[in-house]
Length: 236
Image: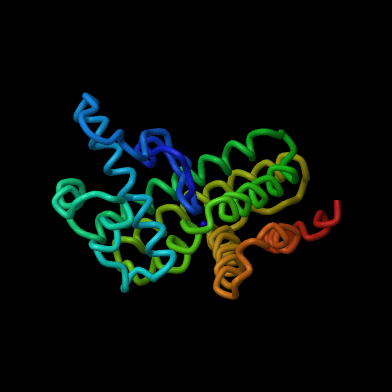
């Protein structure tokens, strides 16, 4: 509404926020001749660059981050960087989209693990916060620095937010199936629910409380239920 990891086909399969997203590829190639296929080498280099970008942006901020910072952290050449990405912004966009989609995948997986809509709502919040805590570098890079990364990054954020809006719409529809008399709600309500949780999380991270995000679960759930006209379920 978000990398630490061993290997990195990293974000070429899926990923989510933190010291590095969960990845699945060689993060470090063997020294000297190794006989690895070229595509394996390139995926490893790409993954290392993506993870390095996330780490450096989380530490220094997007504006202060340079290509030299990223290549130095990743241990690859500047030439290799430009073979993989157009520029720093392109690298950030790839990392952001892959990280955001991977996180959303974890949230959807959690939601579908129970048939009860109230539990689904709670699991949605819990999984979202847990992924941010698990991958703090990505959480800082993607949530705090996205505005600095410019309009293309903000467009990706809007796309990801829309996916969460659709998730909330689906969850509310499940509540309506179980409780007679619940009205249809305009899409603006679901957008407000996404924005409310996003603001709560960003504020906490900005204040240095990223490791404590799990404590926000009761409040975040209450806000969402209240917006849906279901505040009475908050203590259920």
